[in-house]
Length: 480
Ligand code: SF4
Image (cartoon, rainbow, N blue to C red; front, top):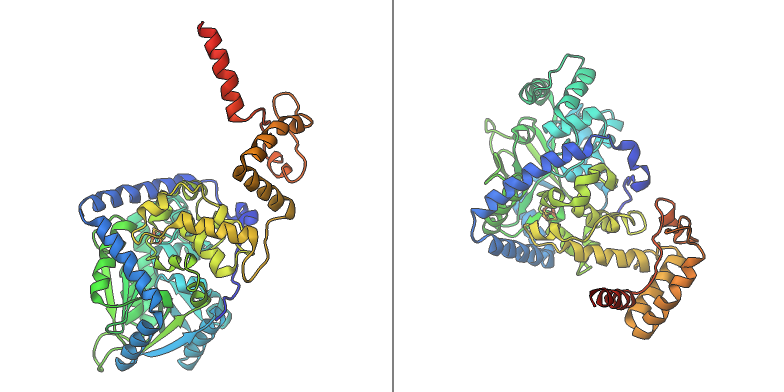
């Protein structure tokens, strides 16, 4: 199965999308989540064991994906649900559009779903003349703003309440106050009438329980429940990586997810959906369709290092602690999933040629791996992807320019052979002195000019050993 190329903005253009207030708003929110997570984690003495169990369950499920998916599909069908397989994003879009057409849908209400972001479902629905309305408050805000999400669980984390009030005032033609409770009330009023008139509800899912064919949604707003139960038609689009074996596994993930995400013991709503409603008069949709999305996942699962990205439960804890994310915000990643998880997800989904900057968008400090509730070794995967970017992989050649690869190759050789290292550090000061102006090198030849375009380069004067020898001799002489 193939991965379809979906929009990726990339570093070059991100500055056009990034308001100046992002770091302040992002840092405030993420610091609150970090504090909340730490408090909840300290309440569970067996936290580390839970992380290990969760990691093992995920890897076991990836290894046995076909078995669990088939078991899940059988159960959904037995409960009256209709299952569709989508090999690509385009397949998924066409399946949803076809269902909408058959049911004469004019308005679709949507619960928060990263899978529908991935396949750009809103654009497809709107292009077909169907209004697609986001009903999660954060998603509703960014839909009004015309942007994508900047955080996995808090899509509008980059906006302050004053900016949201200004947005509501402009887009909803009213005088909205900058009071969060009032803003939520306004959104609720606007959305309620839509829930009542929508012909189709669209959602994603946090987990798919193979044992009973149950879809699990973990949310903090009642909108997910409204989307999936009020319209007569419910369509869920879910990545195949969301499958878990059984309810016992689910208890492990539920203990980890809310604590890691928002610092809650449990999210406000945990919803279980097994097929459509059974009888007339029962609560729930008459028809339930589940679109199982591959879009390149089965191919990535063959890579023993890269596939660990599918252990992710989308808690956002890695974003909250990442020093890069906290300083640049989510839009800088140019992809709908940002932060450390985006940096390992996007290059694998889109290809290392397309998202080649993202594996480098990290200091490799390891804070992300320390907090990840399913123990994804994010720095290891980043280094693996850097290697693929530099050396090429099975689908694309290397994307690093030849001179940079040559320099990296020479550096690698020098660090591996002591005599080459000594020789190199001996001649480097003479070579650099040609470009030195005063204490700095203001303009270096290609490829080092990539550095000096932005800042001067400090010249290399001596190896550390020589520097140490010279300075310790001076220090000894001064103390005599
Ligand atoms: S990589 Fe780990 S910490 Fe980051 S969102 Fe996924 S599960 Fe959470």
